[in-house]
Image (tube, rainbow over all chains, first blue to last red; front, side, top):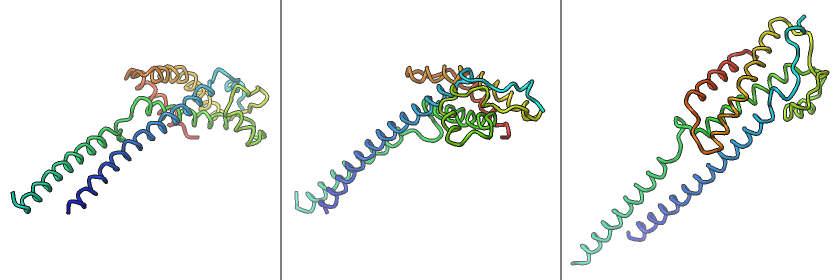
Length: 59
Length: 146
């Protein structure tokens, strides 16, 4: 009986450690996704390239 | 204390410990961000990705169809490589109107989105007004039928 409880306690500790680890991984993933998304915004600057002359280039 | 009582007492103590651990685990889980409460960084990621996706669609619409998929991908990654001769001409009136409106929104959104990101990078919380204006402009972009 006490061995079963000890196993349950050990399981809870493992769960707590796993939760903490997954929370850290999630934060790293969020940071990586953010950095990638912002790099795209910086690159896609509408002032960095020519645009068609929409007023003059109509059929 | 008899053996049975001793065992019962031990089990009671273990149960209390188990409940305490459960409470700690639940408290830990509740601190994880949910879908409804995104952080400024997550909001910025969403807005950045929508902007980038819409910009790619805009580039697809203004670049000549003769440009290869590989070159198109490169130009989307670095639009500063786009030359005037790579651009389409002769747009239908309706198409020109929509693309011009989209271009004007990109010109308006880009500095605002950069400002939002700079606050996020500095560890701050962007103003609700800036966030509202950005979301409105992004929604306007999304409203255009591609």
